[in-house]
Structures are given as structure tokens and as C-alpha cells.
Length: 584
Image (cartoon, rainbow, N blue to C red):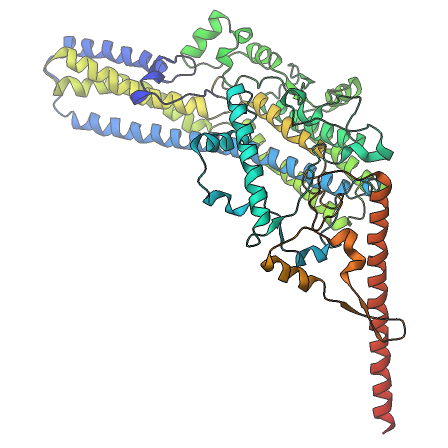
């Protein structure tokens, strides 16, 4: 793929030679100029019925346009199939990751559930990340610029911009303090963000997971979620899941761009954080073709299989975790591109099913897993659609017909223009432009009809694979950083009258049925440790967290027991009423 920007009147595009159809179309255009002068010399009188030649040229134009339209459809469909294949593989992996995070091994680090903290809804709280009335304030332009920097999803390392970001943070803190004193606005449910995704406390607090501190820009590193600073590594299950998915995608893309059995199509270890692979291969010095191959490309001929193999070998596809010798040998044993991709698909499918039956996906039922497997199957379906474009060329009869009539128009257009122009240089120029246009369109169709093997106008599979790998590694991120709202000491604040009315409603007693069937009262004071507005930002000790969690479980179990008891007594009461009516 050749990325480009649009300059003034697109004049900057005229200097690009590699992958251009304009310069290829000029070669037959110069040939048409030669025909023009020959016709003007040997046939100065012209033709009596040049309209017949005009009809021929119009017919050839329709044939060429038809081929260009179909070639562009193949090109665009190939892009769509590849992107949808990668999307399906990505969706399946992320779904399985989400199921895995619900297994019992992570009970100690799972975020609190809103279902268990339903009483928070009576405390006039909001989950807004920014205070709602902040946008109505008169924010100074300099501080507003700091907000843009701070809220950018891309990392801004410029020091001056970082100072603006700090100014915005201070301004937001002061505005938040004013808002908390104003009872007309709901208070934000305060949380202490866990930028490690909760991984730090897994397996009895041992350092066994990824970690980085995003409050210090120099601590993030280039590996991102794949960072193992401090001796921490991601979950082994997630590592294997991500590796097999990355391997499947790499093998699929590799076979799409090269399905010759005896040619090299290497994979290599993917390094996180490295620069994206260059999309335009003509800018890579190591991919310079020999002079003879460049001349072949200039006249529109395909490069030789050896040159294509050398080109593919110099741009290997990255696999997360690398690829073992055993995996290499088994992939080499699979005969044909479809078999190699199917083998990688089998490895991933078998791993997902085996781990599900072993309990790695928690209590998620089989229908959920089958949906993820369906995503994998849909990805393979898109792969085979892309294989269709690679394996089946543009129909030979139409390609042959077009090639023949492209040669026919070389003398035909000069014949017609020689009749309509009295100046030879103008006729020669028009002949050159007309033939170059039609032949250039024909070269466009040849360039687009196989988007996997026409460098530099091919699909940038190396760049797509690198982006796919970086997306896969987000599976290591853990839980949402702002999901831990129940691990902080509750603290009551003095709300305004408007807020007090809501708070007083939340203190009304709860009616529950006792063991003897009578109604007993439990106030929210029993839940003060878990249902009060959470505003402090200090972590309690592990013992206190455990105590709060046990208290939550105790009250939840008690509520469930009382509900069951109430149901039994109602059924007993209905039974007695029915018996009494039958006796009457």
C-alpha cells in the first residue's frame, strides 16, 4: 500500500514513480505518437469513414472500464475480508479472556459488583468521570488547552504541554471541591484507580502480573500491557491464548501473500513497542529489487517467483511469543496453504475447548463458549473468501480480450485524431494523452486484481499483523481501572438540604420477615461500612478489606435466606386457604 497525502491540486502525486500506472501508460502513449506520424506521412488524405474507428474506440473503452471496475471490486473486497477475519479472531479472543477473568482464581481481585451495593443508589451519587457543571464555568483558554492535552488518548511527552496538563488537573480539583459543597449537584462516587488492572494482588499478593505506573510517563515503557518490569508476567493462560491467536492470524496472512510450497514464508518473534512496519515497501532499502526486475515492473510484468519469495522473506510476520521449532515443523508438514491455516486454527480451537472443560472460563456455560467458537469459524470463513481472490485470477477470456484491444487502439486513436487536427504537434499530443489514459486504466486493473502479490500496491499485511498483535496484548490489562469503588473507607459528608432529603430517605428501615413470620426492622446503619458514600482515597489494610467482604457476604446470605423463608410461608398460607375452602 502506498500512503499519500493530498497536496495542492494533487501535484505532489505526479512525482511518485513506484507503483504508478501513469508512467506505465506513457509507454504505449509514445508508441501512439509514432503511429500518428507514420499515418500522417503515408496517408495524408485520411479516411473517408472515420466514424467506424470512433465506434471501435468507444467499444474498447467500455471493455477497459468494465475490467477496472471489477478489479477494484476484487481489491476492495480483499481488504474487507482481511479486516473482518482479524476482527473475528480478535472478538473471539477477547470474549474468552472476559470469561476467563470470571473464574474462581481471581475472586480476590475481582471488582465489587453493583448488584451487591444497590444501597448506593440512595446516596445521590454519580459515576461521571468529570463533574457535570465544569463545562459551564469560564475556563481560561490556557487551562482549557491543558485539558485537551490531559484528555488525549495518545501519550503527550512534550514538557510544555505536560505543564498545561498539570494546570488543568489543579483546576479540576478546585472545581470539584466547590461542587462537593454545592448540594444541587450529585457527588461522584470516588474511586482510587488501579492502573494495574487489579493484577498486583493475584495469587496471595505475589508479583505475578503486568504492572506500570501511568502517573509517571517515564515508567510506562514501550511494552505497555506486555511489560514485565519488577519480575511480573501475565497469566499463563492468557499468554497461551494470545500466542495461538497471533499465530493463526500470521499463518493466514502468510499463506495469502505466498502459497508456493518451495518458497520461504517466515514468521518471527514480535517485539512489543517497536516501530510499525513500513507500509510502502519501496521506502525500505533492504527491499530494493534488481535492475532487471525494476524494468519488468515498469512495463507491467509480474516479478519472478524468486523475487517474490525474496521479498516475502525480507518482511516476516510477527507472532507474539515467537514460534517454536515444533510448531515450525508441524506447519511445514501441512501440505498447502489451507492446510497450514487449518492446523493453526485447530490448535487454538482445541486449546479453548480443553481449558473450558477444565474450568478456566469459570462458571460460563457452553453456549457462551460456542459463541466465541462461532467467531473463530467466521474468521476462517473470511479467510477462505480472501483465498478465493488470491487463487482465482481475473477470468482469462476477458483478460485476453482486453489485452488484444489495448493493442488495437494504439493505431486506431491516431487514425481518428489525424482527421480532426490540422496541426501535427497537437494531433500527436492528443494521441499520446488519449492512449496513455486508456492504457493507464488497463494497468490500474492489472495492479488491483490481486491485492496480495502486487507490491507496492499490495495489502500491508506486516503492518496489519503488528497492529493486531498490539490489540491482542490488551487482554493482559485486567479489570477496568475505575471499577474498584468498594475498597475505600466510607466517610459521611455534610450535604446540603437537597442532598439531606435524599440521605434521609436512604435511612428508612427495611421491612424483612423474621423466622416466625413477623416483620422485623433493619436500618441502613447495619450497612454503614459498605453503603456510605466513598470519598477517601486511602487504601485500607488487607484484614480490613477481608472483614468488609465477609460482612457483605453475611448480609447477602441473610437477605437470601429471608426471601426463601417468606416464599415458603406464603406457599404454606395459600395451601391452608385452599384446604379451608375445600372443607367449607
